[in-house]
Image (cartoon, rainbow, N blue to C red; front, side, top):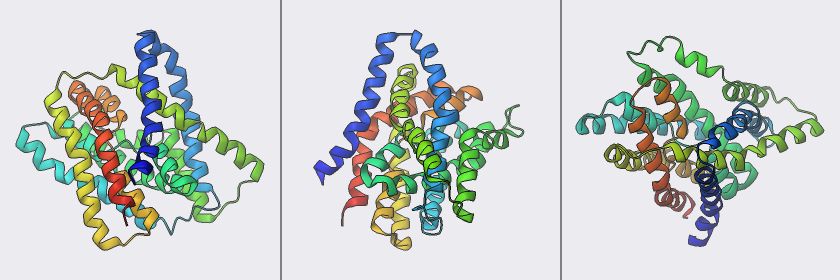
Length: 301
């Protein structure tokens, strides 16, 4: 079990480390170098990954319905668990809750799922990614933008980004069982899968800009995000009785750290970005501990 878990997480963290090392080596010029790469990834490659995973012949929406429900409940449940903790520690809920509800199911979760469960696992991970995004772009953004002048229509604008559009088309293809011609599908699939190492490399590059000015909230958030998710997942495990592979996917999803995207959104809404940055940085470092825990809980007999 230990060797299997190590074989899953090491490639992911090695690519992140290479991205971070490259960013440290290149200095400030890395921002301009990565700008076009990041845009290509978010506008083209990652949406194609999402679409092809959901439009694949082996993706069954009905079979993944319980897993999607679990993803929604884990995201919402993590926010519910984090709310009283934020109050107890005196944190602004607009700062603390969104990173607890939106984990790194894209940059880190998709590659981990592909390594742990293969192509079928990638399709299920995209279903969880869809569930998490729906919660964040509805509930999470409303919490983050509460009282802000940009709040009006913020969630709807974000729902129209290429990733969400690809998700909607993929969902439609899965529902009506559209068959994409094999040569076209293969080309789109190859482009989409290129996003996996690129996303991990970009995550490492982005980590260079994250600071530890507010390390206290960072340490609390780094622990609360995965522990709250795993606690909710354990509760759901008693009732949902998912198949073994989906059960493993659920626990892996629950153990993931806060998404780097939360830091970007905190900057956009000017909601204590330094504090969110610390939560993201320490959370992703703590993933070295919590992701193996999640994999162990999900993969054990």
